[in-house]
Structures are given as structure tokens and as C-alpha cells.
Image (cartoon, rainbow, N blue to C red; front, side):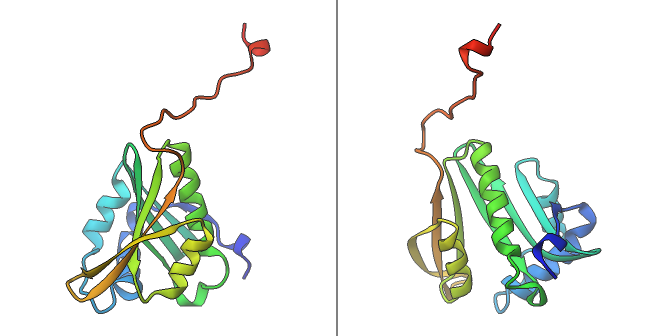
Length: 170
């Protein structure tokens, strides 16, 4: 299956159970289950967040959730089912969300991941993210997190507004 066969679209409220199960089984393994269906449903419905899914038919092959603030966006969750990995799905989800953050005027995109998750670190590094700090005990007091950031523009600076050339103005 090629990437073009796995379209990206906004998550629907009915996806909350599947996304929560993927979070439990693919992200939160060994840490307890924080992103249960009601919490994921709130994230899907949050007007200041985007929940994006990659579908293989009716099934969710991968997903990502990002919250947007005035200056910062935070990539909270990203997972791809093992059977769908190495097909560019995660790369497409990240690229779509980073572009959305840039269009929305965010200065940066932030995320945390387990220090031992080397494939994810490589994915984010390839997408232009830089490691900023390691936080021992970040995950339930047991596991170290790596914080990464992708700078999109200088913080505090006004976002340029496109204006038509003078010759096009009436």
C-alpha cells in the first residue's frame, strides 16, 4: 500500500475510541492510560486543536493531535499502527501539522517523546525539530523525556500578512 492510498483527514468524534486505544497500546505502554476515550473526544472537539487521522479504508492507520496557542503549537500525540509503518504516514502527519502551525502564525512547534524512542527522534529531526532538553522522570516519574522544538519564526514578531502588489490594488 502506497502513501497515496492512506488519505489524511480530520478525526471525527466517533474516532475517539480508536485513537485512545492506539495511544494506550502504542504511546503509553507501561505508563498507565491517560488518553482515554473521553479525553481524546475532548481533544477532537477542541477548537484550539487539530486531530488528524490517516485512514486505510475505514480503519485508522495513524493519527496525530496538536494544540494551538498564540505563539506555540504542541504536538501531543502521534502514532502509526505497526502494520502501516515505514510508509511515510508519520512524516505526512507531521508535515501537515507543521505547515498548519506556520499558517496559523505559531512561532514554534513543541513536543516530548521518550528518550529511548529512537525512530521517533529520527522522524522529528528529519522534519526540522531540534532537541532542547532531557527531563528525567517526566513520564510518571520513571522515564526520561526528550523535548524537541521546530522554530517557525522569531517569537513575538508580527506574522506577515500577504497583500496584493500595488499594481493589483484598485
